[in-house]
Length: 278
Length: 194
Image (cartoon, rainbow over all chains, first blue to last red; front, side, top):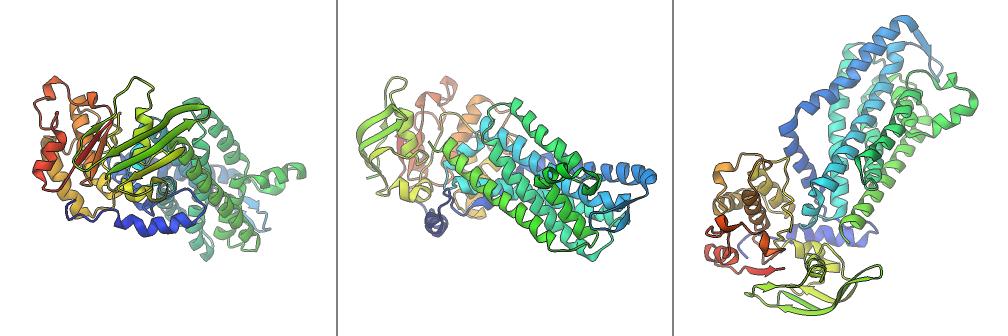
């Protein structure tokens, strides 16, 4: 060996991780994030599209349809212009979309075709580092898009409360829940056709999670169904914050998303271990 | 003793891939597993590379147990996989830079080592290029260079027949790979060719 100090950086982290009932990791998830940032520098055009989509929706729906609808009575009971009503939902859905794209298509390619995780697992990195790193990267990207969207929403005058400062961390939380579950689901996919199931899950959520009209417009029997879906909780959380309708219900939405994120992250790490470390 | 196995076994369900083998590899040896397809060579190499848990028997790498010290053992191995598995989204030198970080090397250590290895693999003038358009032999050389980024104690290489072809035989990365690194570096490099 030369003077390079090897093995040492991993040792303390491995002692800790061995004590936990989780798939192994070496506490080096940040290098998975660094790898993605490095690759991203070669494909920064994706950054523009990820930001543009929700902004296009905001102007098309908020301004266009808003001219016809004028105002909406929210589930919190206040009367607001349509653009103000729809902006938080667009923030939540774009956080979902970005996280799902990153954690399904990109992860599937790396897992099945590029064999990127196989070459990572030949190093001290463990399955948990990969799961945490990939999800962490999806969150970083999501935070960037969400911050840009919030800035545009602020300039467009559709942000009405100081609570909106918390809309950014809330968007990151939505990203966490969807990225974790998305990556977990991706480990079960074996062909590109399986992505139709993702679309099948995402599309109805985007349209019907009280995104474009309040929950109260649904018949009672359907309302519980809507409330069971994760995007509903994301939309309700963002809407509560951006309109300043803050109540304990927001804690419930937050808890739902946190639980989903933790289950997804653990499941994803466990599955990568099963698939690649056999 | 670099590798010692006693009664090492690997089963997948009912299928027995490795059936109780005993192996000892000492420092300075170049050790190879030979056998027909399906003999269990790759399964054995995967267990030695700490990416596949042993089903039975005892396995020690550098005297450590892969089931307990997997990351620490992998930090000292240089694994050269059967398929290249390079990161095609990155450039040639970025492949080396990020791989060094996976091993916990500092940025300065990684950059210095990458510069040496690029020169060694005769890829210095292609360092800023994406990996995808490289020729098969160049990709193989980069894979070998990458497996040496952490200055490994042992370099398991799967499938020696995937080395550069006749044109590459005269190349420093040809038959004399481990010896070449030893000449460049006074410390020991022990090759284990599967």
